Image (cartoon, rainbow, N blue to C red; front, side, top):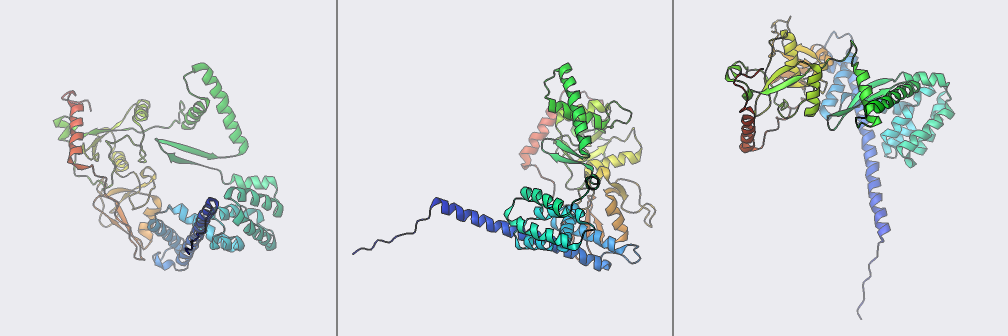
Length: 451
């Protein structure tokens, strides 16, 4: 007799349940890894504080601070994370372990996210001066809530709990919140950026009302097709830039000119022996701000028209690298700084993204030092102030490459890697096509261009 084998059938619903269960396990593992990373970073920074001699030189008036700063820089360079991110992770781990041990234990087990831990930590100032038992009770409750709530719902719930466990005078609460007021920018795609302003709610409402009222009038008068949101944005930009006032923002415009577009006489004056980093941007590719961010050509033309003057930048027609800059109408130090902004964009230390425009112009060989470093572009580079200080007062070693970029070497043995080489154009054919286009553009130019 033939025996028919039977297979256990799994419903579609059961299969999906198992798939989501697998994702749930992955989420717990991610939570554990995130909290473990923060805990280990905190341990490393504490170890550096306890052993400042690893980084600080003898005679340092604040070796612990120097050691902490160096350890944060090394962690940032090792793990490719911003220094502020390293500091925030360390702060979260240290504060949660000390003040919210039950919630931190949930995070270490994978049942609470770092976002939930941060939400609870934000409320700790309310508990200042209260008995430890009050904070402990709050910690126990939020630790129970964390596994079953999303980050947003958890944040709202723990705030209500904090108001119950640690009621605070609204005036005092506002003063604490107001101390965090700030302004910062956040780049987005398409050459745009957000400007975030954290201020008093009443002031924020007042700003928006004024923008709306003015936008309504502009919309009635001009009818240029802009939406009210667009007009509000344009008005806010103009007001903050001070357009039409004595303190208006002055824009510096750099016009890139490929060397092939110059007359033979002008080409003969172009310098080709200046240090250019391997990762220097292709300035022929698109207009850029001095921070390195790309903008569209229409915006660049508008900036040029508004500025009314420009600095000529001579570039290689194929690679787009800076070859020379017009130095005829400005002081040498100003031209040198502009040169450094164009070819570097940021601090020259590997991994540091501090804008060159906000950095110090540093003499690699000190001007007043034993080697009497000259003030020329071969000896100058943008170096952000913290790096500049550590070059002289820590056991970090900095090695300058021929292209002007700087390698960081830690006493722990870690050394930053050389920046990736510039993206090469694909094959000789593409390069030849580019040269042909340039020659086509220059065919009708006068023999003596007005540059």
